[in-house]
Image (cartoon, rainbow, N blue to C red; front, side, top):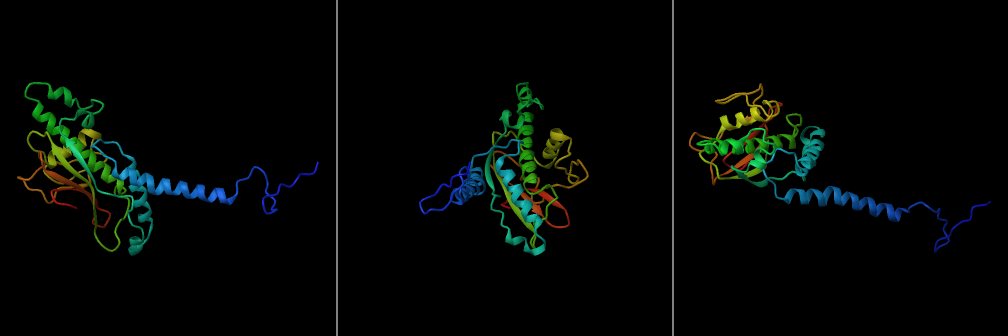
Length: 240
């Protein structure tokens, strides 16, 4: 039996069951807008805490940084890091659900013991600062990407304000946090008063013995690509 032609308003044959470009193009445009504008924007402004989990905002930044890395030499400037933003975060030194969600470090148990709350809050805060450094390290390629466009590249990942910390913490405590988290395999620190691993991935260059992390102060977690395949996470008292 011969197939009947179906005619539109202007007498043009339209095959049944196929979407026209008038439908396809707006749908594709909508998917692109949602995937690469709306979702990244929402992810960048959503509140975050200092958990170890890699979030949606970090994944979008990693994708953006990967595209920039693929561009050769000084032309990298043509790929802005639209999906990478510095975000504010509160580090609550007694929030055990954030620093020790599965009880691996037994920090909440430690805090309930006599004279152990002081040390528990210090470890909890250090674990959260390590988590933020780990997430920042992921965002920019874990020493595999080159972000430079003919200049030293430094950018901010997190602006962290500390609450409920008893005492202070510094480089040694964050190195201990790296060891506790994964045996110092992910973010290493081969320099400083306490060492772990074979790579100097954490930098505390602008700290002094009287200006460590403590309650009420703001600290910055930055990514630093100084060239030569030697990326670092900077823990700084000053903006990146």
